[in-house]
Image (cartoon, rainbow, N blue to C red; front, side, top):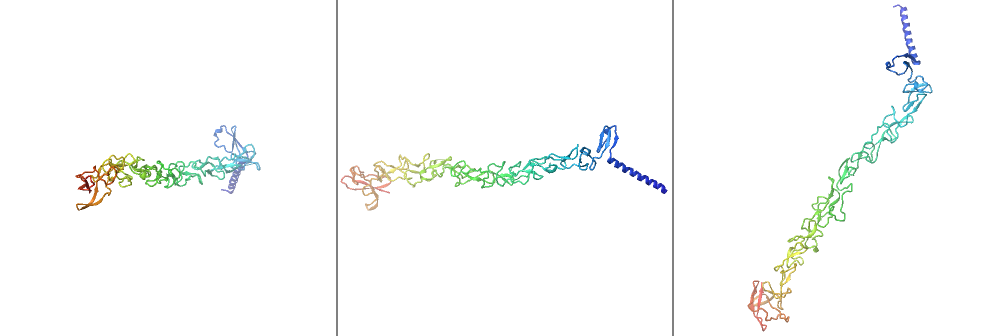
Length: 445
């Protein structure tokens, strides 16, 4: 190729590039107008002004010339100082009919200022006001208040109360919207029944020897059958008040006890048993518990051992047992019992012996009774020593005082020789001369 031809091609290329550059400059500085009969055919209208089928290509981006906000694109405004389009700052809105911008309404969110608890304040992105949630980003759950705290871009939370926490969780002492455990072995709503308590964030049974809800009764100084066995504390391991189950603890009324108790209530002392205040003292003879109350001991029993033969006056006609149905010891109404000489139980109305009738004989005839429970022996008394037919022994003579009261004087009313002493004695006839009669001597076994 000749040099001349190469030169021509080079000049043509340079000219073509120059034309393209001139076209770009003109497009960026001036309005280009074209006519479209159908505006729907225009796909993209950025930097275009379409009016009456005419399309104008305009400069509306950053750095483009402008005289008012509407000359600039939607994300730019017309800056008065140099009459150029500039990016609209966050939290501001351009003014279409003139230069500049205006602030977005305070405490509202816009793109670029819409993170948690962010909000426009005085035209700048800042922190949302306390007690508000312009972005609806704070949950009112657990300890969350559902609003912003107002001093940091964070949601606020309660530090007291329970919020929406589950049982045994609380906001007391919370350091975030998360709930914290209620203090160990204390009660909270939903866990406040008898002897219930919170344990590591869950509801369970209160510790033994504690009563976090002050719900366990205590009888104190007053006996009460319904709570007499109460310890005043929780049992532990089970949500139930503790109780005593022995006879020496608690404060139960008479004939009630904690022995065998299965709750705070006292149980009955077993029937026909004594208890403090019922059969334990001498003035409570034959008293015994019956069906939880103090009554009388059953017949032929002696739960308090007050009717034992030999105790106090429980001799004579005493049976050694309670009579039953009354507070007295039983007694015989027949026989001799353990009465003294010249006393017996015939017709007895208590344990005391009854005097044998006057002139009656006791123990097979060895004793002669005066009707006052006494043996009418002669003046030398009984027993006495006498030698009869060379046989020493214990003797008692049956004599009856004369009507004049002269002791030892035998009258015609005395027993005549030949009187039989009966099966309890050996009889010997002997002569005691009193100028009137013979008498019979009986030697008792």
